Length: 184
Image (cartoon, rainbow, N blue to C red):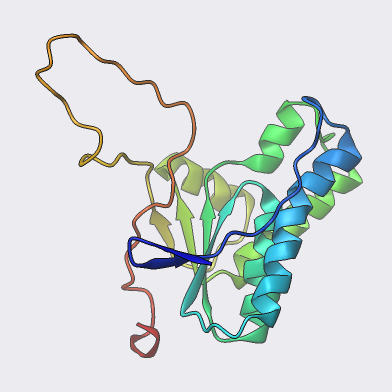
């Protein structure tokens, strides 16, 4: 455990596949190692939390939030959905549409949405598509990707600098207005 800018940071181990294109078993071990480790850590830690935020994909990050902490405490759960992971997996050929794995994945995703206190989405379109496919009873809040303008800002340094960022941004800023007054 360490402290970074006044925030306690706990780093947990995860397994990484050794090949560039792992098979199904290696891919599943990769996707499940961190959520299972996080769930065990959450069960045995004595630290109290007001809220937990899990970011998907992968889908299995819902294990520590919805299936451990939410069921064993009164913690609020923010389910941050950054992509339509199941649809992407079908499009890339990792899952077959209509297969048992797809049906189980969609049931798990619905179960996560049922347990969440807040669902965050990066775009309005993503929120619309999730609402069309699933029953969403929790409030949905737009949590767009952003940039730290204190770190990345225009300069008058002569040479034109360009940056291309081709990934999701880190932890988004969220409002706590949906938390109950007793948990703020």
